[in-house]
Image (cartoon, rainbow, N blue to C red; front, side, top):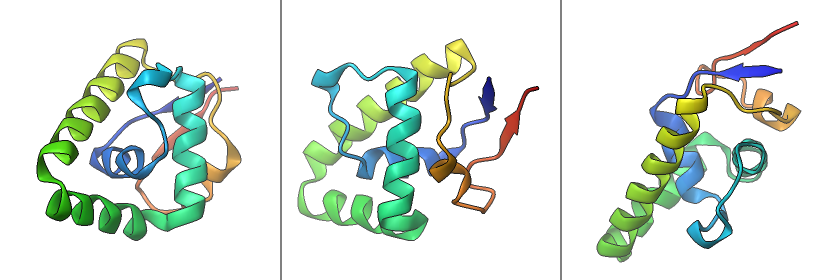
Length: 102
């Protein structure tokens, strides 16, 4: 099982991900979205995408960020993601401090 402490950077990554509220994503889907979005855009690209959306569509972007924060809050209540793909570990920085339990 993999433990992950979520920080502010995860909000940017999930905001830039293709996840949609209508999908009702599981913790596993969220972990996969984090890894694949970081691999595709990088941390700076995720932040840039988010900033662009807030500039172009502020009301819609604010609603998406509320959903992202609620989603992360709901998952943090469970305090773990069952599977964290290797692509999330690839990020390398302190964006996603990850501790793998034996």
